[in-house]
Length: 113
Image (cartoon, rainbow, N blue to C red):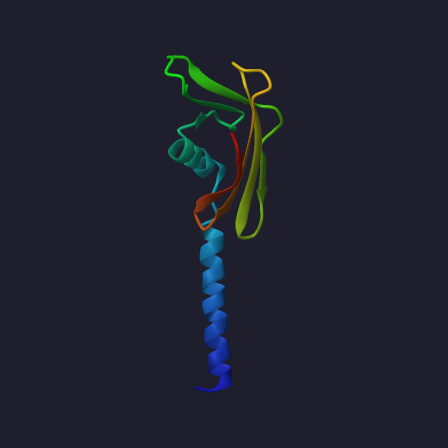
């Protein structure tokens, strides 16, 4: 195989991988689904309020309210999400959630509970 065909094959393969990765970039709805599956947290339409079951066994839900708007930064291949939430029940109980979305999945980069 000549150098020209090898280069063409590698270029086409790289282009296809880039296209698949771009098309599989996660969305904000997939972020909400990830929060539900990974941390048992439900979020409202814009993820400014998170609710979950209380860990102390009471019937009251655990409610977190965003202290600042959810930062949903989209890049070419990835999505970066930063959220800062405060508990309604306990003043000063602040949770910081950071995640990176790549190829259809989210990966936590920082979770402060």
